[in-house]
Amino acid sequence: MGMFYAIQSQIREVDRDALDPNVLTAGYISADELEELGPRYGFARSTVAACRKANENFRSGVEVYDDYTFTELRVINSADIDAKPDCVALYIMKNLLLVVDVDDRDGSTKEKFFTALRRYAPHLVNMEKLIFAFLDLLVSRDMLFIEKTGNEITALEETIFNDEADDSFNISVLHMKRHLLSMHNYYDQILDITDAIEENENELFEDDDLMYISNLSQKVTRLREDVDSLSSSLVHVQDAYSSFIDVKMNKSMKLLTVITTIFFPLTIIVGWYGMNFDSMPEFHWRYGYLFVIGLSVALISICWIIAHRRRWL
Image (cartoon, rainbow, N blue to C red; front, side, top):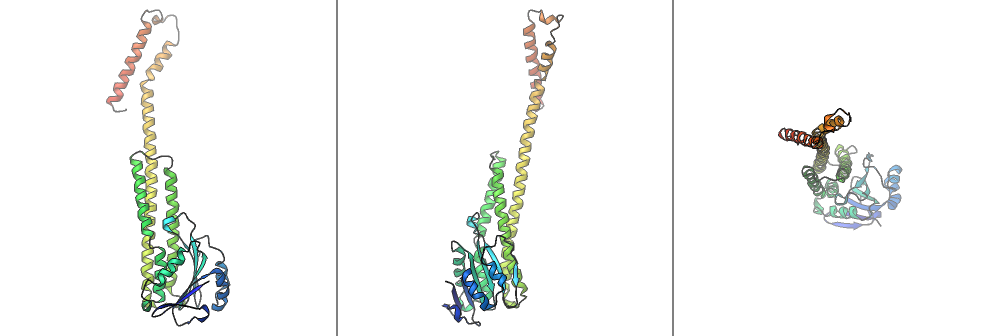
């Protein structure tokens, strides 16, 4: 059952059929209840239909009508970013903020809605403050995610320089990229909402009070910039990993080349004495076998010393 709260000198629950259009009111309802209330408030059928199913895209856009503004909002829990986002819809009218539960499985967004109602003293609350309080709570813990991700990126850099990166390195980077992209899109949709409110095309808001929305916009912009900065850092980490792999490969090829060069004289000796001409005196010499062994050891030693002095090894 939906709940409506009138905000005056105190917050009190009111019946949905007895709402005063001159009193600031906030409501949290289900999509089924919206089917009944939609025609009463003149909501477009397309917006009501959009609330029947959770939107799979972050950039759903903001629809501005003469008497209200509508948008859908996918809410990411930064503490569990792999979980499916909640989805709510917002109807913003002159004195009514209506939050529609499209897909809030754990009730976390609903809890933030009620927390927002009590963030300020009731007699000081207006629509702009109420919207600010609700949207601000949706991103209130995101700095912890950003800080944690930054530490994880630093840890990845350390594994590269300590030569401890394993086969899971690229998978870890890919997961982080996906998380950061999700957060970037999340902030973009909130900024779409704040931009539409600040434009105030349908004149629902007082210009002097839009500073709360402007402050929220600046905060979310900073969060988005932090996320983009982390994404850039990840690109650099991945480039560093690729370069490190190339360096290791080059070192391996260099070592293999040097070893091949050191033992190359043996190939010549084998080819030389493998011709088996009867006129070769070493075949009939008593010490011919030992001579070849000594020659091979001497040549390898000389090549090894040269390589070592020139720091090829």
